[in-house]
Image 1 (cartoon, helix red, strand yellow):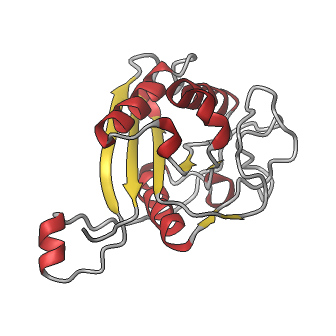
Image 2 (spheres, one colour):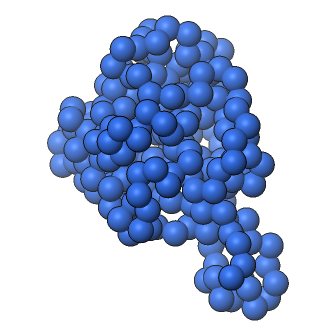
Image 3 (cartoon, helix red, strand yellow):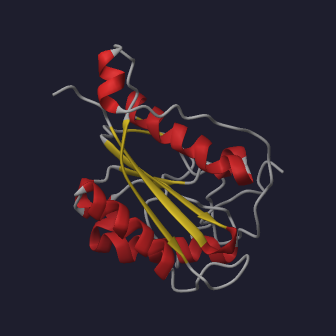
Length: 200
């Protein structure tokens, strides 16, 4: 199955279920500062929406996913050009990847073409209930290390998926703000926005 998970590729045909888990320890900022915690990043906003469309398929126009991203940006007080990286839901299914691409374009406008986006499911598969936590941890690691993970197996570009998916090779970049998309079964859409922590 090395080549089976190929998000945003024209020959994608489904996801690979895998196993894994991630744990995020969330703490009130003032409390963390008071005890001298090693603060890895801040969650500055989230967005949530529901497609109310189909039990396994996303809304074909991506309106719910776009709405969740827009809510997250608005709550964070961010403009579209202030997001440095998006960890896509990117399941490698024909419909999800096309719809998520449309949703990103709706939420970010022309700036969608300037943001590096990757699907780490291309490398670790779909953890189902664990996916969001692991991908959130990946966003934090991107902020800390300045390395954007690639979308591997992206060898046949899909004209309908025409954004910068960081194909096949990791990329060094300064990332201050990262967004994580989780677009689950039943049309549940959730988006987290992470920011590099700096005192003051």
